[in-house]
Amino acid sequence: MSNFCTTSTVSHLYKTYALADSIAPFGGVLHVLLIDGSPDNTTEIPQNIHFFSLKNLTDEIGKKIISKYKNKDKLRWALKPVFLTFLLRKYSKVIYVDNDIFFFNDFSFLFEKLEKKAVLLTPHFYEASPQKNQNWLEANFRVGLYNAGFIGVNSKAIPFLNWWANCCLYNIKKTYWRGLFDDQKYLDLVPVLFDDVEIIKHRGCNLAGWNYTNYPHELAKNNINLIFIHFAELSLIEFSKPENYWHKSYINYVDSLKKHFPNYLFKRKIFNKNTVSNYLYFLTWKFCMLFEKN
Image (cartoon, rainbow, N blue to C red):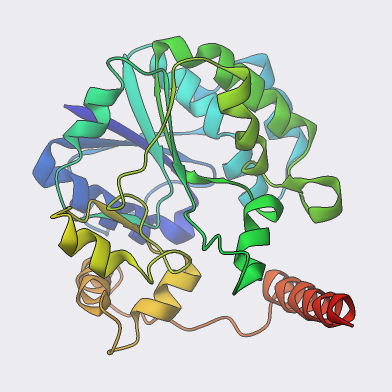
């Protein structure tokens, strides 16, 4: 049995159920911290899911985080290390994944790595060329080197989880000029501050809309299996295009979502706080680049 965990709101349980379905064929069990309400009993719930509520988190740090963050997204992100610590009291190895992740192949090698390593991190693998598309190069330093949608830990990771939980209590905010990006940017320090940390460089892990461009060639050339895709909004935008190499994987994911949410239809969010912020940042960046050339 391989223990995964995630956090979710009731409104996004259909994604959580799709995640559970994707790990079930490979022996995965999904522990879900539901931060609001309770599951709808009229919906078919995968048998490999175990639910937990905020009441299960009795540690002082967890109580402080719950008291501080009323925004549901911030609360979900901030409680990742608290929930992992809670689960490690019973299980020796646990992997956290965001509920918009979907597995396509066996993940057992990741748990095998946790026999020797205390923490597993996955890089964003943004483009890193200083000659072209330099906005992606700079994104590594603005958003973070590692993606907080995947964190693997064993029982020796408690010092890291305590530190990360306190970081999340300190601040969950996207403030580039302060070097903050929610719960994620703190992870840049983990390989510096803690031992037994492994960076997962398997290119079949955490494939996404921000790193997919070279993947078809790398996976095929090196006979590497696709393990999981992170279906964040950018991934949905890119992979929903019929000409995209990963469109079939997108269709498989949508079919799984529709099993639990028959009326699901992906709609791109043209304008919201994050997209407006990103557009403004990119325009500012382009202006700075033009100014530097002159």
